[in-house]
Amino acid sequence: MRVAILKERRNGETRVAATPETVKKYIGLGLDVAVEAGAGLASGFVDSGYAEAGATIAADAAAALESAGIVLVVRAPDAPLPRGALLIGTLGADAAAAAAFAEAGIEACSMELLPRITRAQSMDVLSSQANLAGYRAVIEAATAYDKGFPMMMTAAGTVPAANAFIMGAGVAGLQAIATARRLGGRVSATDVRPAAKEEIKSLGASFVGYEDEESKAAQTAGGYAKQLSPEFYAKQAEVVATHIAKQDVVVCTALVQGRKAPILVTAAMVASMKPGSVVVDLAADAGGNCALTRPGELFVTENGVKILGFTNWPGRLPAAASALYARNLLTFLSTFWDKEAKAPKLPEDDDIVKGVTLTRGGAVVHPLMQPAS
Image (tube, rainbow, N blue to C red; front, side):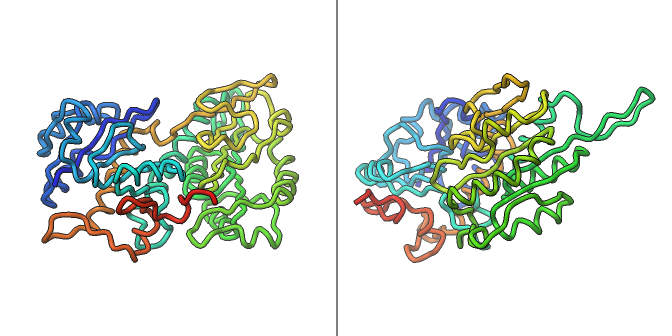
């Protein structure tokens, strides 16, 4: 069976779905591997590295896909895939996209839908990528901030430590807290999920937030934040508004699975911040947590606040992001690998398989992808 690794074509996508390291392991499973020429170049993986690992370098996507039984991608591909192929990636699918996969006879697995269970941790693409995004967010903030993160005492005077406020304490937020602490900042954080308060404190940050009965049920069984009521967000905003006015750096990380990102930082809050302050919006791909975020841009407001609305934050660390992502996909495939058949076997009743499978046998099977009635 052939596995095809395609070059990503979405604007700004620098990652790749396999590395020479994982190519060797796919070959060890009995697969033939075809890598489209230049697929890993933006991540620092050259064609010769893939060839040395045993892959065939295909001239273009069509050549890589010829007779492919498995296709590994970062994002959903534009190229037509062989009917019956197993497509694995972060497909960002909606009902219409899932229906198109089904009509084309593609067995599609969208890895961002992986359930947050212990057995799935080593294949959790959201966690591996969010971890890097949280780190990069603080590095970008430190670069954009004009005064430096740690307290510095000199003969000419003292430079105070930066006040950094992390909004959202999931994987990205916790890494942002840890990174800001390592850089010497005074760090505080907030999150609507009840378990997050102790996690925030365990990293040495102070907790800021509004708590009520609704917030006690603010987490899904899969470990994701739930969309809460407008009333809750209004009360949360009141609590954090005064706090934000005193911050030098605000890092927004709040995402709700399958929905537009909630607005946590309003235009009025940005207006209250000091000139030279920085807002980093990791949710820019989903519309942004800050009302003034311009996705894909660094925007400076009239009062001198820098808003970093870059998209594809993991892609700003492409080598590390690709290496982790590729291992996630390898773990998924090898977990469900039939050694005798030398092919994947995805049990329909397995929780992981049920969580990620969009289409099977020409039909849409994921409950979230069913067309609206």
